Image (cartoon, rainbow, N blue to C red; front, top):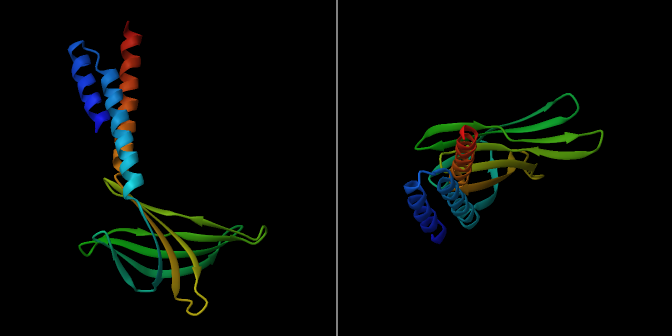
Length: 171
């Protein structure tokens, strides 16, 4: 809050002098810091077990596992889940996280699926299928609210820097 007040005050002072790049950069930095603090305080991580067709509600959204596929690629084997992210019974995005196995090195890697909202991001990875029931899948969900503030602050900083460079080039 103190950073935001200082940024607004410096913005006012420097606008009077017709130099908007510096206060704009400071404002962007303040927004970035506030966003980073909010993301670290409000982030949630969930480890879930989902069965095919099952729906779970999180943060006013629904997460549903539709399908689990297995198929070979060029140098690896793929386990791919098809998961829908819904709000008010309307599908926002169909996500396809993967667990990849490279037989040559006997190594597993994850391909994360990401949903970008305006003010939050949601990351999904999949893990092992349970031994007792092959239709149940381990799913990790990482909820990152306020991530939009980090991006907004970064864009403002870049804009301020570009504006300052243009001003100096004209002189």
